[in-house]
Amino acid sequence: MVAVMEGIIFDIQYYSIYDGPGIRTCVYFKGCPLKCSWCHNPESQNPDYEIAYSINRCKQCRQCIDHCDNNAISLLKNRIQRDIKRCRMCGKCVDCCPENALERIGKCISSDMIAEIVSRDCAFYKDSGGGVTISGGEPTAQVEFLKDTLKEIKNRDIHTAIETCGWFCREIIHDLSKVTDLFLFDIKHMNREKHKQGTGVYPDTILENFKEIVSEYGNGKIIPRIPLIPGFNTYSESINEIMAFLSEAGYSGIIHLMPYNRISLSKYGKLGKSDQFKDMGIQNEDELNMIIKKFEDNGFSVLCNR
Ligand code: SF4
Ligand code: SF4
Image (cartoon, rainbow, N blue to C red; front, side):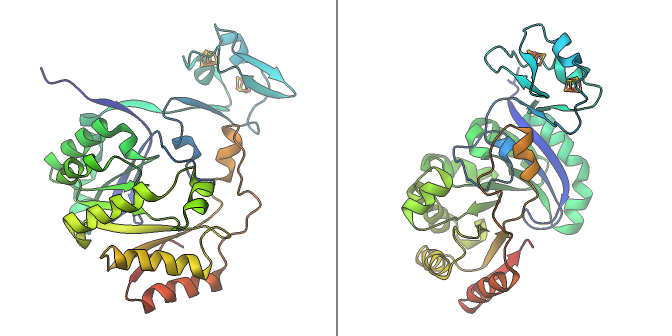
């Protein structure tokens, strides 16, 4: 009997047009080795299950408290508090809440189940030149599950891509490349200290992995994605350094620009996390147009997720 490979995901989104070519289904894996201050998916960072709490929905009815066998929930200062040391993640509080104020983040699923779900939209992929993108989190944080999922999807003759922060062991590139048609590869900053401040890690491994993929598999296998974070990497010197790195790595072609937006702000509150970028403005349009022009003037073509 063939062992079924399972992992934890937190979402599947359909009909995406910014996560690789054509119309795509995106599967979001849980877990990430980076801690980017501006992360749009803070629920992805923790590799384990989590419970999010929407205080605006909560009517303080105390049903979750009554249903918890582990005395892990209490009402304090008009909001529910969960003691994570006592909590067994049984989900009873989530299931009993009449207001849907509690939400379980993370779902265990097998790779062949993912392949079965995503293959329902094969007609859209074929018509649009699309496929499936595995995102996160950082998909390589569950590398065996990732490889198995991609293999199952490829077995169904579907184009595959992964969105990666690039922080992984170089040794996995070869195996991953067999089942991944396209790497959507984040490049965030060339300055080592700034990269560490913003993400928690130095960029060396990431940049080496980028170069390795370009040199081994060519430009058609990879697209650099640059999150534009005002005050972090949008100034002229930073953009120039990124372009210089791409050229030095032998990359030419399309780049994706991902201007910071504030869509995810409410997620931080629900998870009890502080958002370090909450006071930051959104990307200035004039500056964005100048950045796009700079890349284009240097021979890159730009897809911008405005
Ligand atoms: S998940 Fe289970 S153990 Fe944890 S707080 Fe909710 S009911 Fe209690
Ligand atoms: S069951 Fe839901 S609405 Fe009631 S106190 Fe708990 S979280 Fe709030």
